[in-house]
Amino acid sequence: MPSVTFDHVRKSFGDATVVEDFDLVVADGELLVLVGGSGSGKSTILRMVAGLEEVTSGTIRIDANDVTQLPPRERDVAMVFQDYGLYPHMTVRENLSLGLRIRKIAATEIDRRVTWAAGMLGLAPLLERKPKQLSGGQRQRVAMGRAMVREPKVFLFDEPLSNLDAGLRAQMRIEIGGLQRRLKTTTIYVTHDQVEAMTLGDRIVVLADGRIQQIGRPIDLYRAPVNRFVAGFIGTPPMNFVEGTLREENGQLSFIAAGVSVKLPHDKTAKAERADTATLGIRPEDLRLDSSAAGALGSLVDAVPGRVVLVERLGGTSHVHFDVEGGSRLMASVSNDQLPDVGDTIRVRVPPERVHLFGSDGNAISNST
Image (cartoon, rainbow, N blue to C red; front, side, top):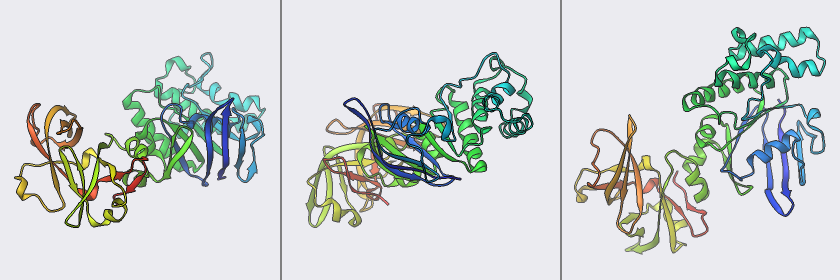
């Protein structure tokens, strides 16, 4: 399968730059996910690959061929949109085959491709139905099948699951991931949903304001975010943040904030000691409700007292929201064995080896490993 290369691509609309210095290579057969909030530039990048938006500067290459100035029909890419875009008066078979018929592909070849795609997507029993007779998930499969029958060099997905309910989104994530790995077609997938990004992507590109914030495997972005934006964007539920200072006492560097004191392990000290102010980040799943006395805590575990303001019971785990001295509100993801009640005073253990530290510029000054 061909690779896709972005060589310092920039896109501006008048004086507004929406994509700045986008530079990376999508490997052969890779499923790369572009993730970010609204206005981050992710859909614009996809549209530039498809030829639906002009590139202001830079180069896009597919399979080493410069396609920057080529019209969409000559790029050999297939795009699946959030809107299914099916023709309501046509059957599933006709919707799947329309693009091939317009290109005057031989009837036998059209039948082969439609049969193949329908079999891959479980659409064979539905070929004579019209879109109004299909569920949302089935319509999305037809939209995917219409892209598949073209047998393109590159698949482009622009938030294809946004119109589906939560259950169907989870099912379709599994199907899209499995399908892409069977076909091994180079794929660029755009979403604002970091759960989709984490479950689908071989690699993830996190975008903010048109700039790349971090590129890496899902687990790498989760474990070692390079800045506060990535730390807060990747992970469900989102990371807790506390503003504070770094202080050295008796050779031990600690993070200090109102109601929070965490002794930093030695592997974080070298980087952290050069900053006076810092933001501590800790993921809710790394916090632990502590039922033991404060004196029984280990030397690398600090306890934070707090008052419970909300308990979200979610089945296997629950989210406990609590306020600490100074006004910070934190959340811990805990098992349902011994849940506190609203108004209870609790102590929460903060394992220092799990904390992340960010400087005043938002960049990581120490990453957990």
